[in-house]
Length: 617
Image (cartoon, helix red, strand yellow):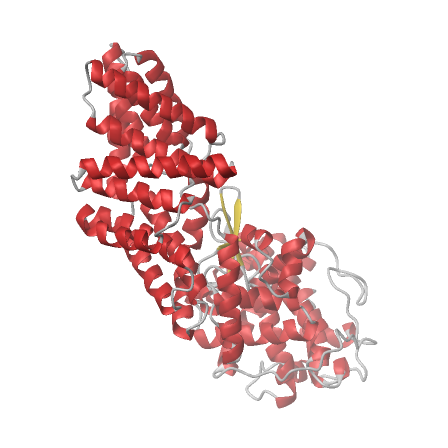
């Protein structure tokens, strides 16, 4: 609201007062009045009248009175659910609310011809035009007769004008049935304007009114033909209530239906759709670092999916499952993917629940659970890793174990989770089942399974058998990489070399000729691992940790210090503490102590801090 003088009716003043405008060619859906709406409207219109008072005082240049009126608007319980609160004064909040009410009244005036038969010539339209003048421009009721002259045909004249307006807008004790579409439109349009960017307190609203709000907005999207926005709400409603990274839509549009695929391939269309839904309070947009996330307010979240028929809900569940499978990166070992998996976890679990309920998409569900298990395992969430791995196997078995390669992979990931929770002896059975499935195979997958088997045998104290299994795994991995030179086979070879190095270092003496010989062999193996791996590839950090250990055993303490300092810096850049960071800090503290460097106490304190954080998490 500003202190400008009143402009002649018909001149632009934040709105245009026109008649007979028709928006769109879609048939007008029926508007349903929610139970108890009359009482709700009687309460809500008191807030509109307070906004009118502020507008009238602004037009009259009564600055002090306008400020008090805006404070009253800000403190009115009718507006408790809406608008900003933190970091603003009551006057700023009141002005924000008043501006949004004005926008909503104008939008209702523009919308009503498409929902009320007869256009602006009928009672509904006349009353809305008059209320647009009254609330937005602050024109007193007794002056509306002159203000509306020429804008409504036939014009409302006479001393009972205010009474007619009050009756038509359900402001009196005897509302008229003809005014009902206009009232419902006005109520929802003002509410939508008030929800713009601040729908976060929707949880305090009445559930029935939230349903009515959604129904109105859903019909409006249909009437306007905004398929992109309807499909986006449907997808988000099919997912869990948690926010979804917008980057998923841009990076995984392939499985999505046509309108959503358009959003994924067009930054402009995506921004437009998000803006339209945000303006109406149908969407929440939040930010985490450089990532934008979107979600539907809690009370509205389930409603788009509930509006679908059962067959369509199943269809959208399958679409969302395939979409998430493409959106999430395969390599959950990589810490760069952890933030994505953290955001996606509730959606994965929700969609897997739907897959089990419908008995469809079980293979895709099993794949997501297997990858989720790896995510939990590398982050040290042991029980969650075991639960996810067990569920992946159950889903895949329910799907009939269609692919032996996948089945063996799920068994090996399950074995790794079992080893941490139940011990190595319990993990031998699933990994041996995987080896049976892979019998007569000599590929990289089989090398990795043998590598895991060797590690579990070692943990179980069966060292000769473990050493033999490591040697078999290394021979196969080298042969495969020599034949293919493929990046994934290089990663497999690097993994076996690294794990075998750990085995050798762990069981060799730390001093003496034998210790130095083993350390020299380990350095050669780690050189080979680095040569076949891409810079920063999988296992790089573990290779650095093992290299520092070997260098220390060879007496090359300065070289070991340099490797460990680079490793610590690399791990500290991650967004959360890890066991690898803890191990690197402990190793660095030991090397600094060997060198007589006083910084070793500071580094050891940091190691304890990381250990505490890991314990809490």
